Amino acid sequence: MDRKISAMRNLGPTMAANLASIGVHTSADLQRIGAVETFNRLRLIQGRQISRIALHAMFAALVDCDWRALPADIKAQLDQEAGLAPKPRRRVG
View 1 (cartoon, rainbow, N blue to C red):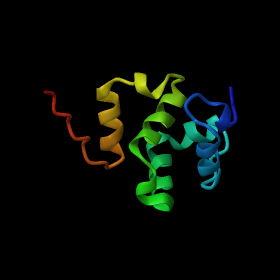
View 2 (view 1 turned 180 degrees about the vertical axis):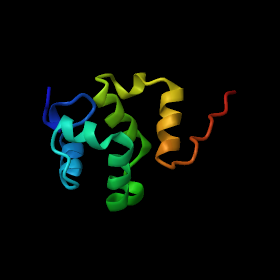
View 3 (view 1 turned 135 degrees about the vertical axis):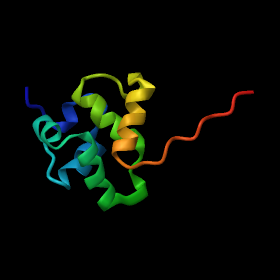
């Protein structure tokens, strides 16, 4: 089912506007381009203003789950595909 970006899980009005600026208006557009390529196109325009969370949110929207529920290995794979540096590990203790 083709939906507007703003109707997709994890993606609100701000992300919908950002995506519209690069020609992504529907779930079909996002699916066709893919989360990683869409993220990279946004990064060209927004630079560091777009975070890896946006990448995770777009991917999770495509599979209809909360971005925080994505397994760490999926997030790491997305980050690697997008050319992002590995996320620093937190120190415990």
